[in-house]
Length: 294
Ligand code: PHE
Ligand code: ZN
Ligand code: ZN
Ligand code: ZN
Image (cartoon, rainbow, N blue to C red; front, side, top):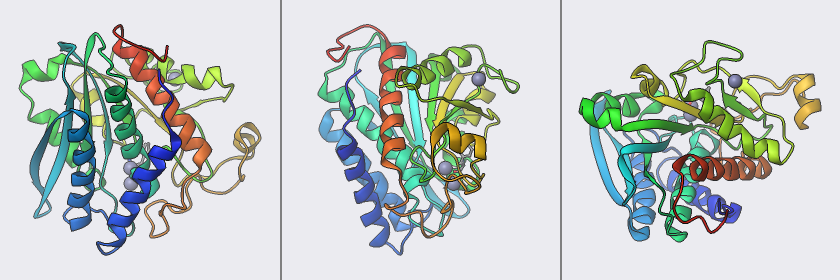
């Protein structure tokens, strides 16, 4: 896989911060900062050659939007989809939650275009609206796909909070080694997401595969899924601080759902490691084709 430039991901986060600042400090569902965030991501994807679609829905009396971007080519009967929610809570700009996953998803999509990657599987990237209102956008997307189209999505990778300031390194427990596991194929996704961290000797722990982000609606339809996470309101234990560094007995993200979730609420090392892990997983799972980066 190609290396994902951290500077590019950070530039997307700076833009999302500017958008929030110019729109009352938030990128929440129903607020102008949400639509401006979507237009920013869409502009980058359109310029790179993606086929983009805005899907509109209504929630809580306000219009919401998902953005879907298809990379032309590959086996459209075997779709690999990745996604991240683009909305913040109303309290703040949502740069770690979930500018981080949104920017990573965007920069991996742009790397696909730069590399002129022609994988054997079809690649689709999603940015979800109204996650913070209860996975509304992602639920709307899967529920409104025709059954035949839904069955073509063979795997879904989710990225929600991948740059926490006091980071842990977590993979959704798709193989059920510490919980109930996911649909068939989820174990393989977890293994591939963990592989990059193994290669750089960073230990990864399981996090609950309980549907607390936008993969939930996918696994309810039996679609294999997985994802990465650097922690939210839970506090890093002493053992975890010994494993990963950082501050014991302090939340992974002290600014979770708060006004201080700004562009300074990001650990660059964690963000960069997750970006490379995502690219590695996409290139590994999408298979075949040109892969100049290995
Ligand atoms: N979905 C949660 C939020 O947006 C964050 C989260 C992600 C929690 C992944 C657990 C696992 O607030
Ligand atoms: Zn949140
Ligand atoms: Zn989130
Ligand atoms: Zn596991």
